[in-house]
Image (cartoon, rainbow, N blue to C red; front, side, top):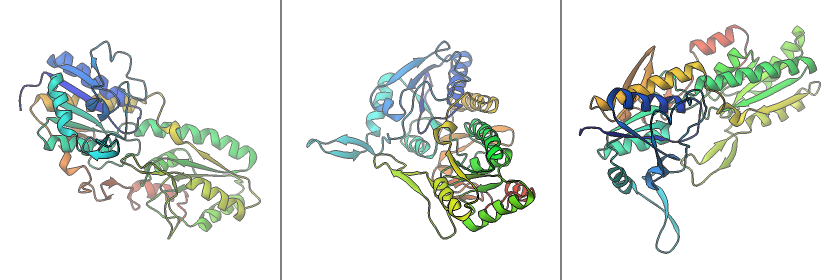
Amino acid sequence: MKEIRKIGIITGGGDCSGLNAVINGITKAAITKYGVEIVGFTKGFSGLMNHGFRDLDLKAVSGILHEGGTILKSSNKDNLFNYQVRNNEGKLVYKDVSDEALKNLEYLGVDALIVIGGDGTLTSARDFSRKGLPVIGVPKTIDNDLPATDVTFGFNTSLETICDALDKIHTTAYSHDRVMVVEVMGRLTGWLALEGGLAGSADVIIIPEIPYDINKIVEKVNQRDAFGRNFTIIIVSEGATPIGGDVVIREKVEDSPDTVRLGGVGDVITQQLQKLIPHHEVRYTNLAYLQRGGTTSQFDRSLGLMFGVQAVELLMAGKTGLMVQLKGRKITSIPLEKVVGSGEVGETSKGGKKRVNVKGQLVQTAKAIGISFGD
């Protein structure tokens, strides 16, 4: 691998807290320790294709550590290996423009990329690595569903948001003897609902890994009523399904790599419960994009910094095609080929996603203290 004098940064996919911490760590380590230039591409891979970039120096990343989102902005619709362009007839078609992107990097003098994102973004990172570009991936998602790393940054900040919301909802549920249904993100995994619900004193946790029976939820509400606790808090993951049923789809976005957008299962459960327990008021809250933003937690700041610095260290050591990961309390790395879309890493992974182990300690702890999973 040739000498690295300039590194490019791309933040792709959905935003989350901790992205700026990674950018901060990369930029400061590269400049301070190695004297390497840094350029940040704006709006994900579209910046790489359309010459959208900004030079990053120590001043540019000063004071961003605590901020949510990304100063480089982001996009989840720009796969340069399947990029939407207009042909000679003016029709929209999909084309592999990755070679053009590589020429843009060469023109800018960028020798290597650090790509920060989830499975879709890291798939592109892997594909660029296959074309010979030095690449290091950094795992990012609030859903915590990427295999090969114990935790992704952004997850902890989202959990704090969920816990804060449940704390507030708890007081109004108690005051009005209401059943409160709170829907959270997570796609097809239940990490946010499980850990947020456990810490936020939820009475029922509904996750994709455990299909629910609406009558079991009713049983839990009635059980609490008999005990003199005339309110119930239910947290439900957006990818949850009833036994024998399917997910609730909010919308389909055809020009996005992730065409199916989940959402609304909490509303479905609310309407069902209102008919089955008419003596209760049942109210529904979807935390939606509140879970993505806000001030970054201490854990995500530290993890983001360590991920960023490790990405620089790997490149400067001549290593490529890797993703940084957290294992226990140590930051290490793993080949991108073993991470993206393979489902090889982790016994609970499925279709490339790290899923909740229904026999694991978190679920068993919740059940031991009386939390129902609707099963």
